[in-house]
Length: 313
Image (cartoon, one colour):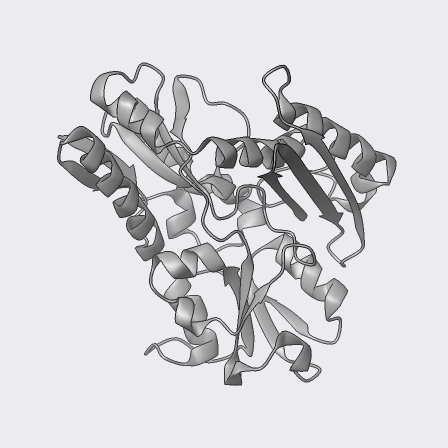
């Protein structure tokens, strides 16, 4: 039996079950989910004050290193960019929808909300984007699982206050738990660049993984997704920014070329941006090369002055 470690939220369980099913199909072995509680699951303080989304990762990695499970699944946008001793990302499956989605009471567009309407998000990036595009709206800091966040807009969960007019969430997460039907509008990547790695999963194992599990992970890995998210995460790493930094980055490969765009925000919504493209071939490391060009331009344009001091290079 293969043991797959996962957080216990509905979203984490749903996306881990998909990976478990894929591994089971490739190995012919039963895959058991092992639920792990992380600091991010039990604390209610803002993520940025706890050190960012990496707080969802520590306990899961400790369980993997301790041999309590054989493989773990992370939302890639939550994973710190520095390699972890003894662990490797064994697979990055094909990315789902990378966009953000708005869920708005009454089904109206964000632009049609009246001044003073309350929009919830726990992401510093989304907060900055909202303040830049809709300064007349009130941005509300929030935590909680997806159903709880939705209930604050939809009023469909007993015991949860119905106190928001809209909420911004990842489209991929809503699809994975079967709640995509509540989306009012998808926010385009060009105007709302998302967190590096958003929509993608990371399947992590110990570095000495072998046999059927290793072969299954090789089969599960999606090469173009891995290359794209490596470029996005390289921007984050080269800027020495944390997972919760107000930064959006998106890369994709089309007809042999990789395109990478990134945007850095101040908390109030000021921004600098950069975009580059280059051909992908075996003689280069396209993710690193392209990310470096983007980061150099971002810094030349003043990105370090916009980002919070603890996130800036």
